[in-house]
Structure formats: structure tokens, C-alpha cells
Length: 611
Image: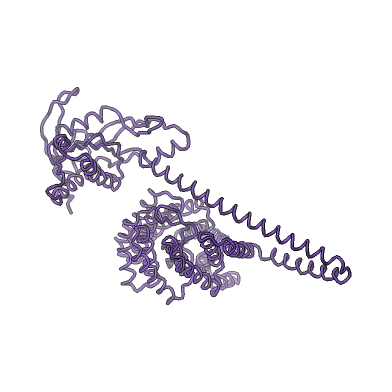
């Protein structure tokens, strides 16, 4: 099945959602060829085929039909026939087509249900390429739901499979899609890293269509970063390629984006020029949805520049066009009624000339009232849109702040119920770090410089935690505390935590080598312990997610008994990682309130695991 670009309906530019601009991602989906679909349906209805051909026909009809309801109909028929003859390949294809149709209809929960059924079949068949494709489809649905964790998880699974299979085009598609998701999360640097991987592959494979969208996405990423020249260069290059290919729909979208881009710079001539170009292109090629969007964009531009009458004119065009697209029959009936009314008025005028003046005055008054009503509705609509945008912006801001304080699941529980239940976790790995001689530095250093330097280190530690799906708990002065195995229990939390600890050591060493003489220099000690903890949220105004228990106290003692540049672990942690890492037994040390405890230094991966 040929991959192609789908659309997402939101883009974060400078921290603000710009609705209506389409981001083009790559995902395997419908061919949506109406002529081909009609030809195949006609052949299917003729009945001139055997069972193998029947399944193939149903598969292609479901794939190519642009109507999601029709696609669902033939997907269901394909599933029925495939199950009857025990054809696992076509059962897989039936669920897959079914999922894409539900996704196209906007029913994301049903789409996931179908895709996961296809995933089960694919796992049973052991078909890696099928598995990678369905992972990509599942990730795209989670992107539509805003589930960041699962988007990264399933795209990463797909990327790994396609990389192992050396399926370059599928590999590049999955990377491009993941980059597009980072773009939606307003993380342009991460998005650009991925776009710079997928773009050269598209170019090497001479896929101009995919390369065009890659350039467009890079342009949007540069726009988020405020690098206006690069943004314009990439989007302009994307538009040029799409014009060469005759792919005009995305061009109108990018032109609308360029209009917003220049409007934000108060370059109104350029902003209006791009919007008018988008409108003309949409008219020329009969792109109805884009035509309506261009009318609305021009109305917004005129409203922003203070031309209320022009804004109202284009807004009327947008409303009329929208209504005509939604219900052409009703518009035709209204037109016929208007013609009849005019004829009646003409007959009455011939028969009763003395009433003409009254009719004229009444008509003028009615038109004036209609104009005033339309103007009032227009202003009200603008007010509602602005208010909604402000509310959405503040909601997103509060959600982001809450997620900076609490784990995602805990934040959701707090928002839904107002309270968070404390939970006990039977196996959690806790890590503490501490900077050597920090107190001495703090007495002599400028406070602002000291805090800024701490932020530099702790921000890097946060990134390392996110990489390994570990949870930052808090910082206490110059001490950093984190945990693995919560709020979701996982099997390898101890191994992940030790890997993260080695990255912390490396970052600290690299930072020292890159520092100038006047910058603060730190050395770090690390201690790790594993065991049961209780986790919960404390506070009613300033929330704090914390963990308690003897496991936490012992982890702190492991750090205290560690040495500069070393990772000191307890016996509990040693038992969980000893097969992966080379550990050096240190002996038994006295631990406050615990007596003698065995401790180990972790020196690195076992030689067998270095490959």
C-alpha cells in the first residue's frame, strides 16, 4: 500500500494554536481514487472471479474508496469473507482498512480498536513490515488524541522495525511523522533533528512529493524557533516543488501559513498577497474547503487592519460558501423562492403603483436591518472566537504547568477528581545526586550565577530522565532526586536508572571540560537503592509529588557514602543489575539507623553487553 500525506488541524506558533493550518505528515492510508474504486466495484458486482480474486477485489475497493462509510462497508465484507476461508493476510488488511476509515470519520477510539486487532494478527503472522506499518497507524491515532507518551512509543517501535528491515522509505516516513508530532508539541529542535534524517532519504530516493512536505515541515519548525528567513526559504522551496508536481491543495495551505507569518510581522501587503494567491489557486482548481478557508483568512486580516466593511464582505463570502458546500439543495430552493418573490413584487407593482414607494421603503429598511444583524453576528462571532482562544491558551498553560509539577497520570487524576490517592509500589529504584563542595562555591559565588549554573545541570538531568522514562521527584538545594518504576510499574527500572546515572556522570565531566575559567565547576556523587515506596501528592495550594519509605532513606545514604564521579548502589539494586553491569564490591559500611550494609560501585556495562 502506498504511503501518502495526511493532515493535522493545529500548529503551535510562538506558543499559540493557529487553527485551520494543515500540517502534512506521512502515514500509510487510503489511495482515495474514486475512478479506480468505481471500476473495482463494478467488477466485484459482476461476479466474474474466484474466491482469491474476490478477496483481492474487496481489499482494493476498501483501500481506494474515498468515502469512509463505503470503505467500512467493503472492509466488513472483506473481513467476513477472509474469516470464512481462514486467510490471516486479508483479515489483517480488513481490520487495517477498517481502522483508517474510522480515523477518517473522526472516530478515533474505534480506529484504535481496529488497528489493535490488526496488530494481533500481524504478531501472529510474524510479518515485520506489517507490524511496522500498523505501529505507524496506531501512533498517528494517538497523535490525534494528544497522547504524547504513546505517540513516541509506537513511532519508535515502527522506526526500529523499518531500520532493521532496511526499509528506507517506510523508515523515513515514520521518522517524518514523529518529527511532525514534535512540531505539534512545540518542540521544534527535536522535530528538526528528525526532519534532517528523513529529508536526505526522500531526496536520495527521488521522492519529490515527500521531500516537498519535509521542506514545508522544516519551514514550520524554523518559524516556531523564530528563524524567519529559514522558515520562508524552506516553505517557498516546498511550494515550488508542489507547483511542479501539480499538487495544489497543500500549496494553498502553505500560502495561508505565509500570510499568517507576514501578518505577525505587520507586513500587511505580503500577508494579503499570500492570502489572495491562496484564494485564486483554490478557485482555479476547485478546492472547496481551501476556498472557504481563504475567505475566512482575508476576513481576519481585514478585521486586524481595521477595515470592518471589507472584513464583513469576506466573512459573508465565507458564510455563503460554507453553507453552499454544506447544503447545495437548500441554497437552490432559496434561490427559486427569491425569483418567485421578485415576480410577485413585479406583478403587484404593475397593478398597484401607488404602493411602490411603501414597498421600496420597507425593502430598504429590511435590508438595513439584515445588514445590522449580520454585522452584529459577525462582531459576536469574533468576540466568541477571541474569548475561546484566550480560554484555550490559559487552559493549555495551566495543563503544562501542572505537568511540570506532577506525572501525567497523577495530573489527570487531580484534574478529574480534585484529589490524588496515595499508592504503594513494591519495587522502585531511587537515585540521589549531590555536588561536591557546593557549599564552598555558594559562599563565594554570585547568587544569580550560582542559580543559573544549577539550572544548567538540572535541566540536563531532566532530559536524561525523560529519555529513560524515569520520573524526577524534586531538587533539594544542590541534590537531585528521581525514581524509576512509577507512576507506571516497569520491569527494568533499575537498569534504566543505572544507565541514566552514567549519562549524568558523562554530562558533568563534559561540562567541566567545556567550561571557561570563570565558570563554576562541579563534581558529583551518585547513590542508588531499590525497594518499596509510597507515592502521593501533598499540599492543597502548591502541589508536590513525593515518595516516602525506608527505600528513599537508604538511597540517600548510598549517595552520602559514594565518592566523586562514582555510582554507589545497595545490595538490592546490585541483585537486579548484576547481569548487565560490572560491579565492584566495596564491603559493608555503617549506615545511620540501619547498621552494616553491603555497597557496590558500578564500573560500567559487562563486556558482553558492550557490542
